[in-house]
Length: 250
Ligand code: ADP
Ligand code: MG
Ligand code: MG
Image (cartoon, rainbow, N blue to C red; front, side, top):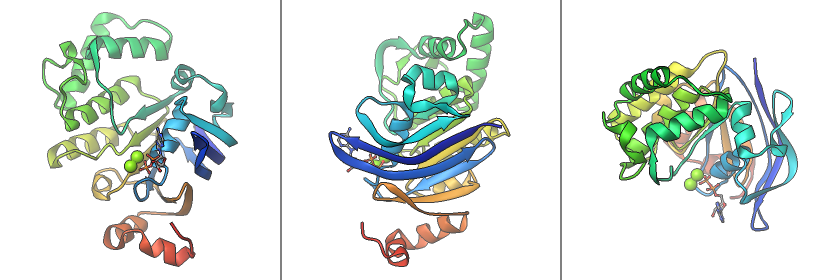
């Protein structure tokens, strides 16, 4: 079993404190949903765990199986078993999807994958995500619809098989069919060897992926943790009740 351990994490962007002491422990086999209003720091948590240089960790710790993530470069974090599906996947012109994926796989595994084996697995995964057949030859996310970009992130996840994935609003911009495809594919990944942080605004992706833990993040902190009952409550009442219940302002 693996453990991602985040303790009292404080993160600033350009000297403005965004995360104000996040505590979160995720074990493999668990799915943690992080919900919260816009601008509350959810993507900041994702980016700082992955090592985006713009985010300065000013206090606290983050480790994976006891190894200090904060000391690692982005590629080292990926090799340690961390994966981030981004809220806004970038396009990279001139690099095909398959070349990108094969390089990423080589970088993470530390060895080349035989081409035939790679192609077979990539095509199988692409088919399960209902990607277009010309996907391998198209440039990375270039001209992709929002839904295609998100499905392409899940394709990378399926191919890289990390220990932990952070999925940042993987449901935004998805129509109902794409939502089901993404949900089913993430569900299939969940195993005793895989843990997941699912960042979302809405409950609808959680119809497909059932979290074992639900956290509410407000103003840079996880203020409430519970089970799936929290999802229904947020769906029906938004976040105002949290404020009243906990006597906090945001
Ligand atoms: P969420 O994902 O919960 O919507 P974010 O983590 O994206 O929230 O943003 C938290 C806060 O940090 C917001 O006030 C946002 O304006 C600010 N912020 C996020 N990213 C940047 C950035 N790259 N530069 C400056 N401010 C940022
Ligand atoms: Mg946002
Ligand atoms: Mg965000």
